[in-house]
Length: 182
Figure 1: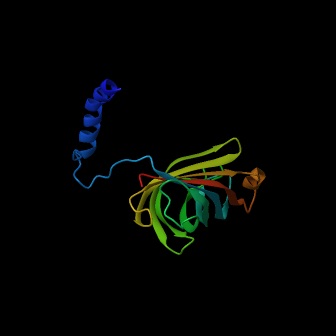
Figure 2: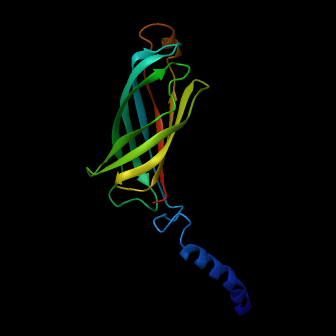
């Protein structure tokens, strides 16, 4: 048994030295962790004018929600949030989400907030559903410094709305929110 423990000492020393060594990017660089918090919820997006088969400038607004938040890094008492969003961009039923960036303020069930600086990384309209992926950092408030990934899946149950006025005016679906590097 002692021989096995002695064999592990060099590996343990290397691990400790690596963890304690300053980063090439300076002392302020945070250590990466696998601790995460996951919330599930919904996303509702409204389009004005409604999305059509051709590209046009549309105003969007809606609400994101997350609930049932769980994970080792969860702040005690924070179990759900909601956030309103709005924007203007060129979109169509074929390409409803354009790549871009913005900020969104998540309001937690205790009234505290998290400001999320996001950018869209993937948006597909596949098999009758819209899948959008957004990544970014919580810049201030609860979970400040954490990374946040949001994936929305919105089934398009009204495809025929794209072919005539007023167009597709709303999509609703599920959302998964994953906070990492807490």
